[in-house]
Length: 130
Image (cartoon, rainbow, N blue to C red; front, top):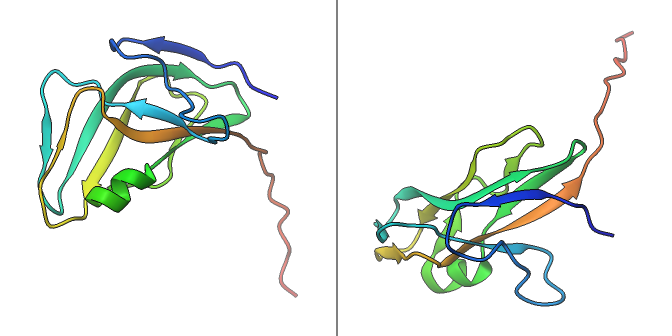
């Protein structure tokens, strides 16, 4: 089963996509006017040009790409980052460079993945102390 998500793409890249048939996450690409250099142990916000409208009862999670982490020490800092159903701004990715070398993010680089989940709201049932 799939959920229909409204999307607006202001970048010149394709929509987020599943890289393989069995992939759980859709790849997100950097949308940059110029390259961004991330020095060792520093973090940068990377734009995607993607805006989505998640239905109530769902959330999107932003997760790192394992290849970037393994090969370059690049990961998503607030992992997983949550996008709530009422957020309407651009999806931006907070990357951190945990390696000892600088890393350059180029326009079109696959920088993270997005996964959509259904969730339940909770109500608290307070238990009184005896």
